Length: 286
Image 1 (cartoon, one colour):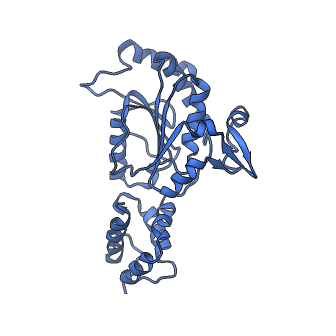
Image 2 (cartoon, helix red, strand yellow):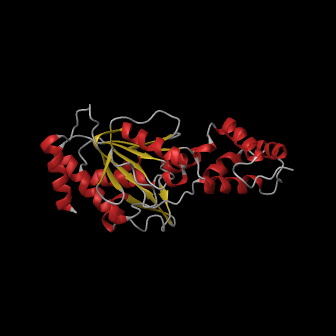
Image 3 (cartoon, rainbow, N blue to C red):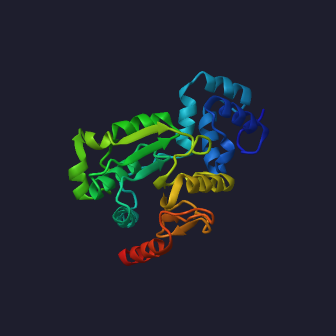
């Protein structure tokens, strides 16, 4: 009998092929830790025979989505890592002063929407008169449905400032819900970061604590895709545990915030004196 305990064995190869056909997701992109978590869940209570495993999973439609949620844990908070959000607030504030226009923001791998709504609150506070474009995407359609509701537990809302909490959250039993006006400002879509077309001309891309679950090749691919998604001078906002983006294409501004540098043959919205002024201004703020 084939044991599905090693991510390189024949049994798991059968499972990966089946999973890709059922979900459209290639498990080759994920780390061994994430894959073992998926294996442990998929084989629980059904044995280790890959043929029997496929039969059992096919009869339980929830299994694919459950595996997805298990591979990348949905740990999410409003304004997670507050110090980094303070840096982002200062950074976006100066960018809006330099380029007074609506911003385009993408929360990639948004889970239940905490980062997308945090960005919406920040933009509404800084520039409420603009009609910003804010989109949140996730591979898990159950997460997308939950994001649209915008409901967070007390623990998930614990890191939000009192000012934002009063303005942007309303009581919903023992939980908190983002007010309707802000919920209407965010578009949520199911999206595969490694396969589907990227969002373009973004001022900010936030992808936090997703890259750490991908292998090195997939991480490189994601940084290339985010580079292509961002406008020159745009910001990439990652998690504390995520890998550092490559320095030739991104400039580190804080532990989690990186500026997309212009390519050698590209014109930039932040070039020459403006680019230097931006760096000097940001250093002064921090």
